[in-house]
Length: 47
Image 1 (cartoon, rainbow, N blue to C red):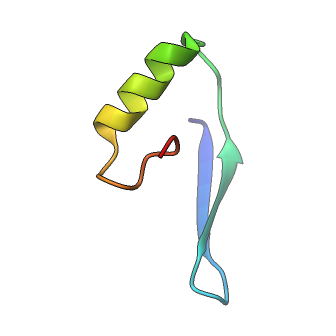
Image 2: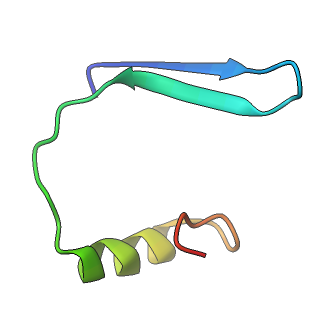
């Protein structure tokens, strides 16, 4: 990550933006498994 901004919108939701450097692209199956493993229950992008 080079730069990141997190803003709270008027409705209370958050928006994240920034400049990121991609250093590795993972196999889609691995990405799903690791994201589910590392995310709190119910908060995984894949759930």
